[in-house]
Image 1 (tube, rainbow, N blue to C red):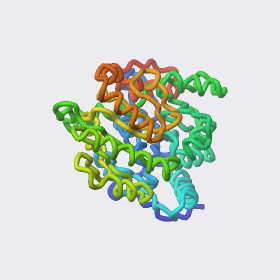
Image 2 (image 1 turned 180 degrees about the vertical axis):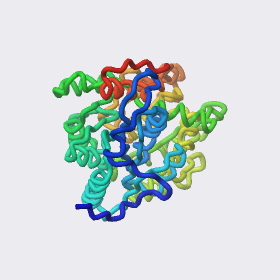
Image 3 (image 1 turned 30 degrees about the horizontal axis):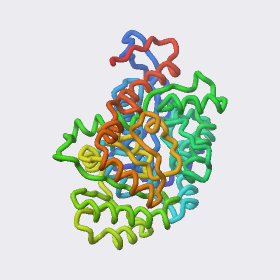
Image 4 (image 1 turned 30 degrees about the vertical axis):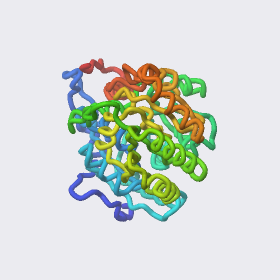
Length: 409
């Protein structure tokens, strides 16, 4: 019996993958071994948020360059307008765009699960790729698991082992690891975490973080480079829900006092749209001359803001990874981080979000330029821009074990 084909919001103009019966006879020559043939693989990439798009877009383009991969992109709608701007930035046109259902995370998750399962029912995919620790990534992995489709997890193995921080991300990424067949940890520490949890060594492939690949791609395409003269600005981002309330107030009071005491210090603060963040920030910082408040920046604009920064003050996990590319020291407004590599490399410092910690650490770096220079990394500890190449090499070794793989560096 034919399935009831309810609308799946297939992106206008996109072509859907062919059923398995249509691809079983299609063989193509490997770019690495041109005299061998193999079956084309239908690959589905699932994303829903801005960070996922950033970290999956370079892999999407790299896979599209491989003749064995027929790649399709599914956007869950977890982030809407901001996500579409990011898709445009990275020249990604989704093949499937789901309709976001409800206003709560539970309602979104239930609707997303049902719609992804429908896509997997109607189209034959041999691999589903997810990234990180979002609700979209978890639901995509779970739907593929129930359909018996192997899951590849990009940026696997990040851990705090505190299910409350970050919430719900820590729980989601641990569960995705239980469902995945291919694990791509960005760092040696993340690989050790997966191995300690009993995941087989042959399923774990150290790659580096695709966020650096994305930076290289975007900076080259959009001409991002340092334009600031002199010191540069203090760049601030603050959005995590566990920091709302007193954490926002402490940050605002600290930034207000620093800006007033040091009028030569320029502050750039892209403010999260949530009223629990935006309202106190506007009230306490909106009338200080050397503090510039703005709406959240697009990806390219944020890369430019990082390139021009003196110090980054943030609770963002992604920016902890991106700032070292530009040699920018990071003061992390959290009590713990799943990205300790930057702290161990000396280019980030975990300070929490108290008023005293923020003020004392910024003043210390203002007063001690050599200390600032010691925090400016020569190389990003999270990657070298070759993560996508390593992911593809690992997939080809697993999918085509008899084929010699030699990709260009």
